[in-house]
Image (cartoon, rainbow, N blue to C red; front, top):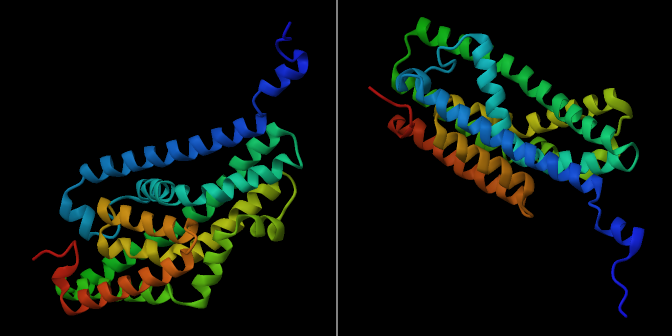
Length: 269
């Protein structure tokens, strides 16, 4: 007679690994949050007059709404690329702490990451208001404003080729190295590590985000393009080469706009 089953041992073998379940839950939540953020951005963009949402750096929004949009942009554009870091952090925490604590502290880590990006949104909003005030005071023509936007793209393209960009990108591309060199214990440590990683990510991507102002903050095509750039340079095997190659393209496009302002998507008049 053939003996069926494996008793208690067989039941244990078929029982799902709680760590894997938590890891999959984190990944699924990151994907769901990113999709939800994209939905909100597309819906928000459709709610505003095209000229306002594209040509005005602040989109005519008050600070709370602007920051909410900025947070949605961060989640939509950055969460796909930050997923490997979050999952690596969860794996490291699971080896040191109880599984439930590791799950919670992974979200604390992501909260620290978002705090840095929300703080950058405050700076971006103040800068947007200042740019609008200066443009109004100087009565800049659309051609001049477009050329300034082109200069921003030129700067972003050049930054892609700098050692600082490469350093920040390396920190983002090597999750285990970051975990080993930046480890902090406890819940507060998880928050600090998230903030540190957020700072490296901001150093890597701040000018890619800055080009959204001349391209149109609610320009979905531009948002999607920058998202693909961020994901490619942070996750693909040849990400560093991708970053440099795209830097050349961004630089060339910026030069084109400076020569031919009509090449800017938000140009009108």
